[in-house]
Amino acid sequence: MIAIKRASATAILFGMALVSFSGCQPEAQAPPPEPPPVSVRHPEARQLADTEEFNGWLAPDETVEVRSRVRGHILKVNFVDGEFVEKGKVLFVLDPREFDAAIGRAADRITIFKAQLLAAEKDLDRVKYLVERNAAPQQEMDKVEADVKSLVAQVSAAENDLTRAKLDKEYSEIKAEVSGRISRAQLTVGNLVNAGGSDPLLTTIVAIDTLRLYFNVDERSLQAYARNLGLQGRNLTDLLAQLRDQKTIVKFAQDGEKLFAHEGDLAFGDNRIDPSTGTLQVYATVANKDRQFLPGARVRVRLVIGKAYDALLVPESAILADQDKRYVLVIDAEKVVRRRNVTLGALTDDSMRAVTPADKLDPQENPSQWLVIVDNLQRARLNYPVNPQTATATASEAGAAPPTTTTAPAATAPTSAR
Image 1 (tube, rainbow, N blue to C red):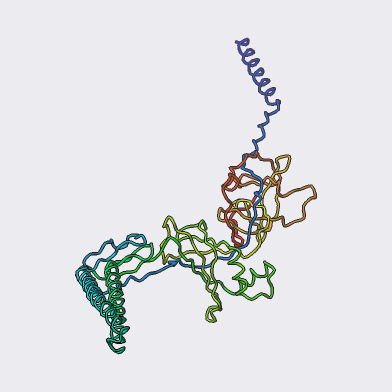
Image 2 (cartoon, rainbow, N blue to C red):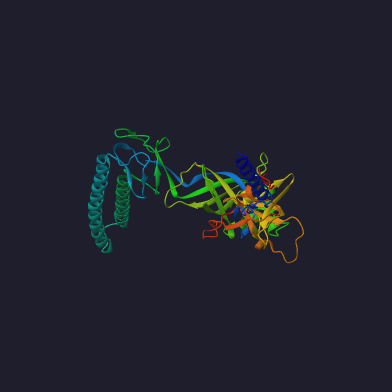
């Protein structure tokens, strides 16, 4: 019994020794966390130009009111309301019977007068023969000569009447004078059309292959543009003429469009400023061969008012805010996050913001070589390393034409670095 107790005591002491020995061993250290992945990219170099935006509208370059030149009853209407018609298309046909009768009457008169003229010329030859032999008085010859001249004039008048009758017959087919989109028919088959002062409007045609883009430019914008071009002292009329001669491009966007993807050429400026609004009306010509624009549509117009300049751009989402300051996060050669304060410039249509350093940089530091964090900004901590991943290139870097920019106020970013 005593041996069993000694064995139990020995086991207990051995277990306590093991516990004591294991407690003296150092704890295993957890591996350091991996640097968080972030997307980075270099600032994009692009040429920008300051612009102004205006409200405008599209109008047809030509508008034709279709009216009849002759009187008659409408026999046919050869178009569908609202369709596109080509120049020369017959739109209305008047009853031709009256015009055919007028042509027949004019032709018959010509025949009559020519027959009378033939007889008068024979009388003139006979009287002239007698007068030369003193067998007839001179007065008789003078009378016959007058009759011949009168009949010659009557034949000419009858031929002119025939030409007019044929022209009226041609006018009985009322044609489109220009190519364009036609309105609805104001008069239909069976109605009488009167020509003259009370001639009714049959329909209208607007030429849409070329449109005019009208907008009003304020005097301040024009003067700013003149200063940018070094034209101080020049009047606004001369400035507009120079802009027209230089084929100044005007960009515009239709209602609902975000990008100013359409263009026109500045063509005209009014000769005075409207004193009630302080603006000058101008228009640009817009090619519309594919007929995607309709007259009367409201558009937003963008006019370049400054010279092009070089700029560095970063995505708008990469800009952070710290009270009244704006900054971006960049990574250095050791892949550690650093802060760079920036001054904001123009905002482009593809949400790229022009930036310039707001603080003095080290002479060896080139802003164009910054690796700016553009995604996963919430994972980045100042003075801590990150795992940089190359971000996807923008449309302009992939080969697309960079969009025109506009000067916009700085946007306040909702996120700040930790």
